[in-house]
Image 1 (tube, rainbow, N blue to C red):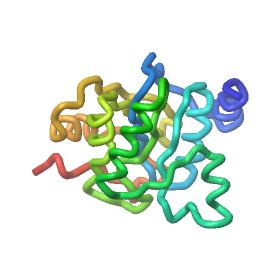
Image 2: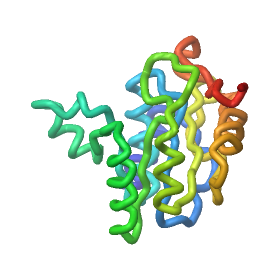
Image 3: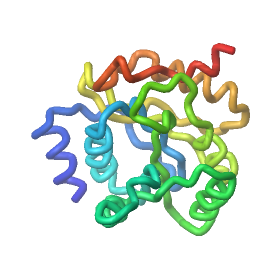
Image 4: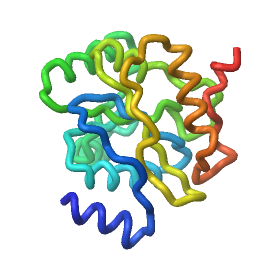
Length: 184
């Protein structure tokens, strides 16, 4: 499946894969920008070609009949925005030898100026790294920007992530904004 996914992504759709996926068994992978459902499609192909154990976090509203079957096969977990959900994800990490949780830090397809913080709390609660993934439609690149190995200060992490995405072009650029909460 790895070779087929890579072939489809690179040869059929013309994307360039950038950055090496680190030799890490567990992480929270943030993936942005997220302005179109196409991001999820290309992101899924990218993740499949890596050959790692991963789960996507998706809106719980998608888990209604008949779509819930598609999303479960897709490897998605419905998001519940409670403190207990962070503990649930930390428990998944603690009970797995290898697991990567993939999510959009924006939390919506619509433009937001304050990104969600759950990814940070998931990573720190489970004591795993944050991998900063991206999809750039202008450059037609998809891949890894950086690994944040020791996410100890949320303000510093969010500021660094905002800088990493400052030169990335979304499918719909008018729907994308880097996290403005670091400008306070």
